[in-house]
Length: 104
Image (cartoon, rainbow, N blue to C red):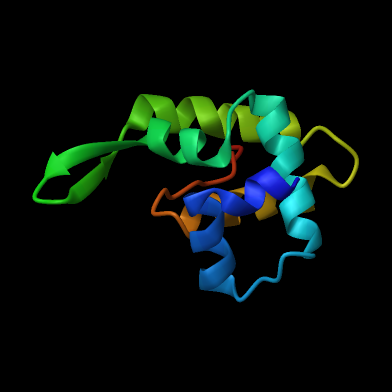
């Protein structure tokens, strides 16, 4: 898990929420990254595209794919809380993630 601490996207999240290196949320993110088969930075970069002038825009198709992976991850014990931790990581890196909703 020490590798995850050097990832700029993780450092951004930690700084944004005031997290220490021993926080349990880092282990949750590491488990999600293993589930998704990518590093935290790779996951964020998949969801963002360069829009020019240093601006980024969200790649909707990629964001949906990552959101689906979060939904799969949510199927674990204590999955709702853990998936919300993962969503927090994305939000603090500029990628809005919404949990799935059921429309009636």
